[in-house]
Length: 254
Image (cartoon, rainbow, N blue to C red; front, side, top):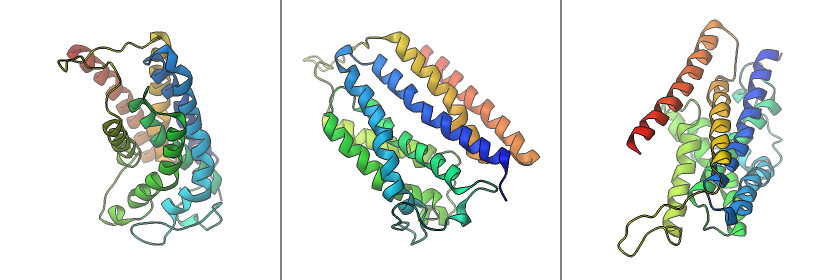
């Protein structure tokens, strides 16, 4: 009934995507000032700690329920039958944890964009809302059989469902909050606000790079069949090449 290799692949991906929380925490803490380290670390921790039970209580049903084109269904504690959407040979709970860590990643993107100017309790409320409503409903449109999916929209590993949702939320939050105090002088020229620990920031970058192989590669949710094996290898190569070339390009510009 179940495939050992497919299940292990999905669980490996879930573990790697979870470890991205550590990468984000290290990267953001290193690039911010020492006085805000505790704040930024706690935000990255609570993204996952709040998002996990909220996605279980409300988010998963809204995302993968079959109620309609705009919204899934209300299924607290995930008691419904989701066999129709499960990857081949993968049990439900393996798929559930894989989706949970994707939800947490969408939420944690915002912590860096709003760093050093967000109250902790306000951020916790935001984290709850994006995990309960924002990510699941938009995710339903794309991955849950909603209206975008019905139009033929395809998102393989979350560039829209995860990263654009987190990016748009970040842009809105940054726009509301405005720049950090001291970021611009009287003439409007930007000032560099230096991070306090480049070693930790660099470690965070490498952790994120490593974990992205799981985020993208394991989104095949299968390792069965020659075509899937070739695709997984290609995805790893593309993921690595994208990061490397983007880094070189950024270095040339800066």
